Length: 109
Image: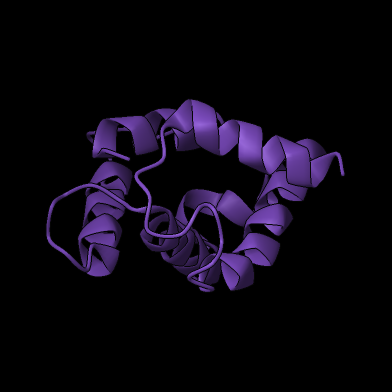
């Protein structure tokens, strides 16, 4: 997942303003979890990023609406699974569309 894809995904939860520092903080957080330095997130890197953003309450992400909160909670549940190499989502470049389908399946399961 690229920065622009990530920004599009998170922009559905919270406002990301390029001029206010929130975008810079997001780029810095992305760089911190990008283990291979390719400037794109694998699924496990994405989950680590989301865990970090939640821990830091980046841009008020922890106070989003009920449906968004369920999606965020689903991320935490998926984190443990994604760390398992046998997970179908592990070590794979995931598009926003694939990610949304994966999380939706977990939320509505």
